[in-house]
Length: 217
Image (tube, rainbow, N blue to C red; front, side):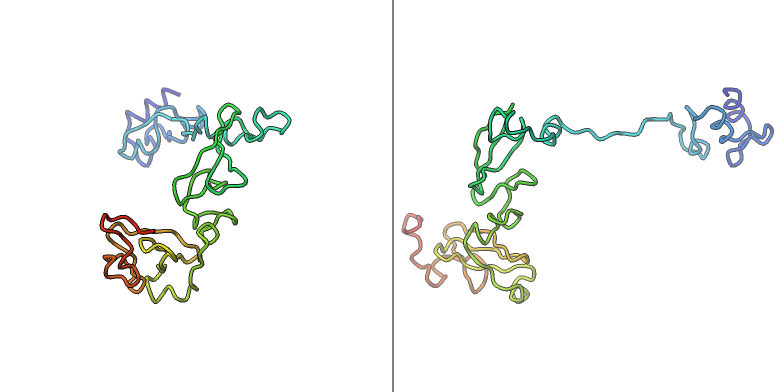
């Protein structure tokens, strides 16, 4: 085999073939099962390379444990943990979830105005949720206008005022679900413009803040 490789390296090569010996790189590969040093790319002017195993994708320990089968209820140390490690929803809540470590649970809360998504096991905006009981319209208790109205405003979405708070508004997406937005002090949402304006320039919100910049209840 090495005689053949040496012949390839020291003789004139044309199209991967030794013209004098009549030996091709394919002949070397067939004689050994594989070529440990060279590839056809090496003969085309690129550096030869050693055969390397294909890279493999690895999962983290948390991903492996989270993807493991659920334990039977009779074998669970904590009834709130179907698996020893992972994040699992609290059935009666959109925002709370169980964080299980070594089979024991602790309750955690999503950041404000987000809900816990069962499938991805992360906190998302309600309009991004697949939980029918926690979607934006139910979570915020507000309905968006029909899709036909969006094109007249911002193309792919519309913005509507909060029913009771001048500093807040809702972004209505094409899926019909709202996302809560807010204006910083001293701004208020202007429903006609769809933007935040000084609160004294927004009809009905002229006295929304007091002299110290606090919202009047």
